[in-house]
Image: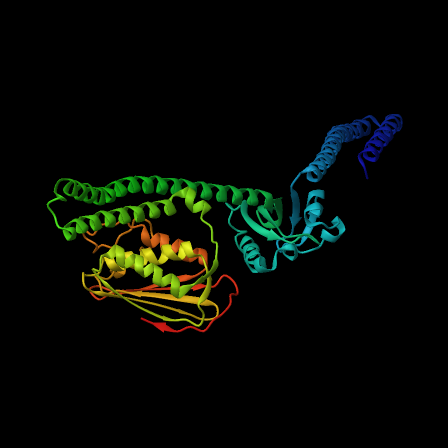
Length: 456
């Protein structure tokens, strides 16, 4: 029975009571009339109260209708917002089964809404993260009794249908009933793949900038060290040249030819030393390094080594003996003569400089069909083990070199020249026993092979 029926019945009852009241007044005695009249008054008041109750119910009914209309409008607005949210929005049960999904969710997963409904969200998680995702979902259910738990956030890799995987930022909110029991989960998913890529590019740019700044600082320190060291190293041969020239100028007419030649050789040695310093600086300069090229040409290794040894002995002034041996399968090797000269000159410079006068330096060269092997062995002061790993760094000098002159550039030049050949260099050294350098250079191309064996 609705409120309209109740109001109609009350109205009919009022009419019926009025009729009965009129009839009773005509037929009954005065006492009965008073009694019946009292009864009818009570009934009439009850009907009045019913009427008031009916009016209250009618008002409540109108209010409920207004509330219902407001709820419908609110539901429509919720549905509109639900659909218009730019991020994927899902509602699942506590096990992750999708119950609602907006249009952004269908776009994100590249499937229709009908396919999403009833699907397990875990199905779209990348395989290697499925277990972790399942554990997080289990943890959400296990934490459902904690009233403080409202939302949680993390990142997960998803695989949309027929599309490449993406990285999504996940925000999960708890949906509870009036008793506080967890009944469902609301999911907000946002594709942050591009943001991640941008962040990675920014990190790479920052790292590149830090490296550039570090290189700039290193270059600045290198230049400072270069100026300090070269000024010191040039001062010694220049002083020797100046003193010998003055002595020759004033006393050559009083000296024998041998004594004059001694000072001339001193000048020549100082000039060669300065020339070597200039060559080293030229190779190490930034512009020269950028333009340094590898130009292999066929060359006779044995003849090349003989010419080099003649120059070395002249510069050394017969202070050391150099024992040379060769075991070559071929006389022709396709190598860069300029770089090879840099390699051997600097290795010999170290071996002669750090070996006692009168000692012997062993030099050997051998070849296979595809590479040349050079070995220089001295019996000098040796290189400390702690210095060997830094020996190829510019301006690094071993801790036991003392006052022996040098820029510390030779080994860095050797390493660059060996690298340009695509070769390798190894060092074996012991303090007080000497050092052995072994350089292996692959041939740059096929050359004519001639059998050759020689030993001096």
